Image (cartoon, rainbow, N blue to C red; front, side, top):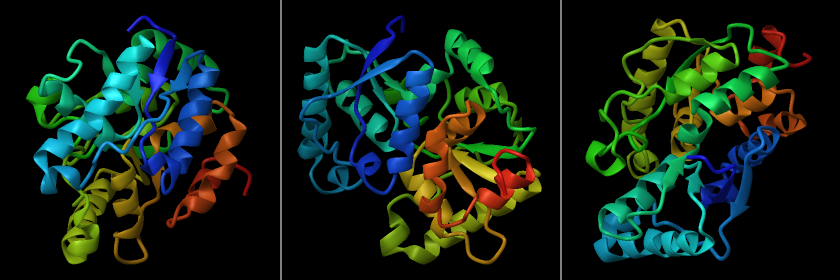
Length: 270
């Protein structure tokens, strides 16, 4: 990827429940000199239900977005892990296979971009101990996403390290959180999120960091008890470290309020 202007597919969640991800993704990219052009007339990619009800529809929905992106003549970047997975799946079925589709993590973890992030980190994260949580959809299926392994990822680790976080090693960075079972099988998702929290605490983390709206929603609402860890989109912490004003607008949208933790590490005013 050599372009500094990219097509941008936000997806539905970033227009609603994950709007903080959209706000901070746009602000961070602008500060780093990466211009995002939102795809005109984009549509829902079908995540996370289309592939369970109509296989053809599950390909046609993301395929339409790929065709729009191809008309723009630019690589396309996708913040949402679920949307990224669906667009890559459509490509695996032969739709616009030559178009470059990147996750936002892939774009920001490139060496030249990491150098810019380091240079612009005016408020490094004071070794805030976190675990990067990738979930399922950024790495699996490995054949579709062209990842070396379906169970290992490092891009978020690199981005978080660049802004001064204490990135903890742990065993569950790609373990499923339960995804859309959160409504139909709430108990299962609570169990899975509880296990993730326990593993994160065992690793010494004070917060989760994610790149998926569904992962944030589940971890932010399905950790049972008073010992829930805050959950951040990785772009929110980038915005904090880079001193971007947009970060201040994000915290009211979190059920597990992260402000006390951020104040403890001197990242915001108490």
